[in-house]
Image 1 (spheres, rainbow, N blue to C red):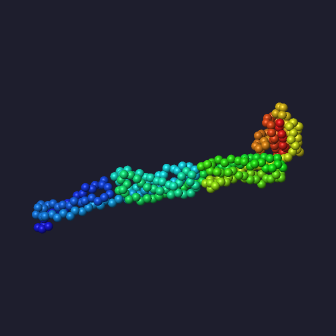
Image 2 (image 1 turned 180 degrees about the vertical axis):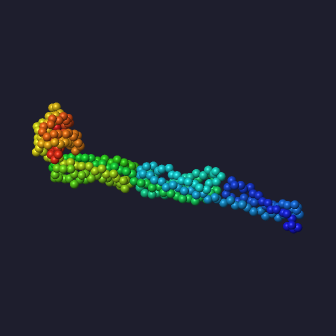
Image 3 (image 1 turned 120 degrees about the vertical axis):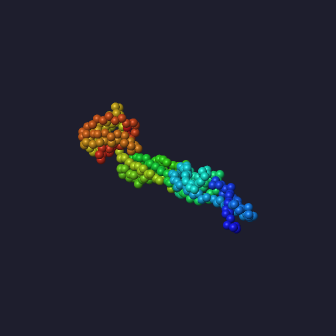
Length: 288
C-alpha cells in the first residue's frame, strides 16, 4: 500500500461450527476507499477441521457363572452439535464361560463418528462363582450291617454341568452303636465354577436287638409295651424324661414327655422299624 491508504483485509469460508472434518477454502479479499488504485493478487488459504477427541469409557461389570451377560454400559464425553453417537460394547464371554475376567471391548457408532478421534477406555467383565448347595441325607442302619448307600442332593447346577454328589463316613460294618458324621462334597470338571455350601448329615447305627411286634421288651430302667390294636404304648420308666421316637431313616417322628412309673401314651405308627430313646436308654421296635 502507498499514501497510507486505509485498505483492510477480509476473508470468508463456507465452513461453520456444524461442518464435518475436512479442508475448506478461505477466500481472501481487500477493501478500502483507495482500493481501485490497486491491482489485487489474491492468495487464498484453507481451513482444516480435524477430528474432535471423544472419550468413550466402559463400566466394569459382574455376573454369576451360568447367567446371561448383563447389559454393558458406559459414558461418552466430548460430543458436540447434538451428534447422535451411541455407546457399544462386546465381549468374548458367554453364558457358559467359566469363572474369570474377560475384556469388554468398547466403541462408539453414529453417522458423524468420523468427526471424532475416539479415546477408548475398555473395561472388564468378572464372572463369579455360582452357589452350589450339597446336602447329604440323614441315614441309619443296624449294628453289624454294611453301610447304606450315602445319598444326597445338589441344588444350583448351571449349564447342565456334570456335577456328582459324593459322601463319606468313618463308620464301618463293625462300628459300635452311635451317630457318625456323613461328610458330603461334589465333584466334576466344572466344580471350580461353584462355591460349595456343604450340609453334612449323620449316619445313626442302631442297636442290634430282637424285634417283636406285640410283646414288650426292656432295657434297664425302661420298658415299652406297644399295643398295635389301639395305637397305645405303655411306658414304664425309672425316671422322668422325654421319649424320642425315630424312624429307620433316623428322622424324629415323635417326642413325648414321660414320668417315673407307668405311662399310657397314644402314638400312631405305621409299619416299620423304630428307635426309641429315653435319656441314655435305647430300644429298637418293629411295628407290623
